[in-house]
Amino acid sequence: MKPAIFGLSGETLTADERAFFREAAPAGYILFKRNIADRDQLRALTDDLRSLDGRADLPILIDQEGGRVARMQAPIWPEFPAGQMFDALYEKAPMSALEAARANAHAIALILSEVGISVNCLPLLDVRQPETHDIIGDRALGAEPLRVASLGRAILDGLRDGGVVGVVKHMPGHGRATADSHLELPVVTADDAALDIDIAPFERLNDAPMGMTAHVVYTAWDAERPASLSPVVIDRIIRGRIGFDGLLMSDDLDMKALKGERGALAAEVIAAGCDIALDCWGRMNEMQAIANAVDDISPDALRRLDAAMATIATPPTAAEFADLVAKRDALLALA
Image 1 (cartoon, one colour):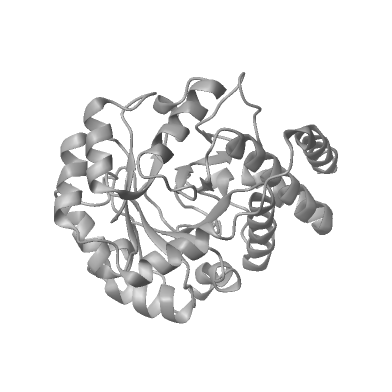
Image 2 (image 1 turned 60 degrees about the vertical axis):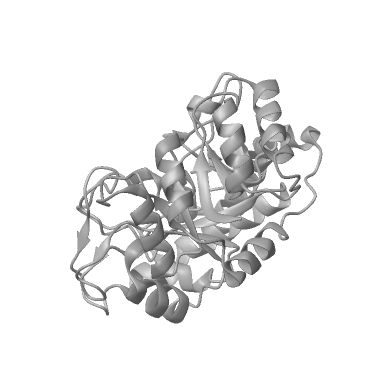
């Protein structure tokens, strides 16, 4: 098994993808809007991916946050609110906000598990800061670390109860970035003491099954390399100070914050301490370069992967979906 999660080019596997994935045996896959048409097509695609090597617990990922980040869209699937909505409710009724966040995540998980998706890249634990880039913005669960952690825990629980693994992101915190890492490399110059705020939610949720790194430079820790490529940040901050022992994946290698050839970047993130290199765009030449550049998944990474996937609960019936949404909407109306 290769320590990589790959994207696909379209709504069905091509002959080249099928042959390559059988040979490379990536740790998992990630889906985007280009891979999604309707329920039947999506379920057939995820079943096809699982048939390649027979892994019932195959990680099939998606970014289904709600708000502006949603790969499965209306009118086929319902719309879900962004993280900011739960932050606003928390101002008035903290317990209601936590229950709304849990019910919302549970409902998201039901639509994912129905079509064979087993991992959702949620929750964001990035603590929102003033005068920063809007790439996080309304996706954030708040500007207070304890609130972010509490809502994040509710989301992880709701996803798990619906049969889906959650991914905490973007470790060790993207909330101070003044640039969009999709387009350029953000540099955070806050000192070590100030960054306690950013890592606090990750410390509280350090038992999360999966995490994703940030393509952000933190000059207080490593002035030369973004977190995804930094052995210092991964070992000393994420694994050490935060105490995270879940499966750690990089953010997408294709983001413009990183420079270099895909195979070399994948090897760098693995060498830095990431368990998995994430490559989202399904370009065959880049996926082949990654497969050639990295060794098989390490025993520690495989242990973490197996442990994360073992956290999935048996999902309840889809009949519960309407009740969950109604409960969430009634609570959010309080805001």
